[in-house]
Image 1 (cartoon, rainbow, N blue to C red):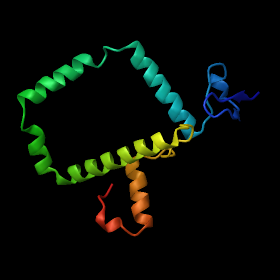
Image 2 (image 1 turned 45 degrees about the horizontal axis):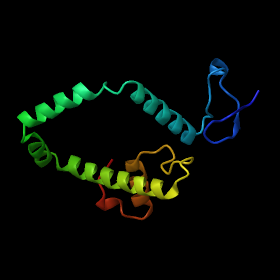
Image 3 (image 1 turned 30 degrees about the vertical axis):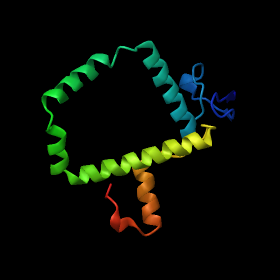
Image 4 (image 1 turned 90 degrees about the vertical axis):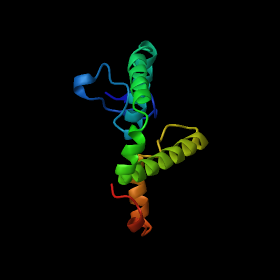
Length: 132
């Protein structure tokens, strides 16, 4: 028997082991959306879960002020890779805001770094990018 996906409204055949509880089809976009909703719901039910960890991390950073400066100076490849990741993440967020439908994620199950690597390789720019 077919069920209707909550996220893309398509019909799908649920897994026989989770027939009664499965609400989403197997498409990567629907799986991503389902996971995202579950994480948001969990965080709403557990708002104080990350609080102590953040405070502890902030206090450690306050007592070790030069740690990240030293780390970045010693690991330039990490800095380049992180800069690329941030640039792509912001680009993704802007496209997501422009697109507005949210049903088909632009990444299609790939990380932003995989997409950038694929894009640069297709356009012959792979010599100037960070290896992944």
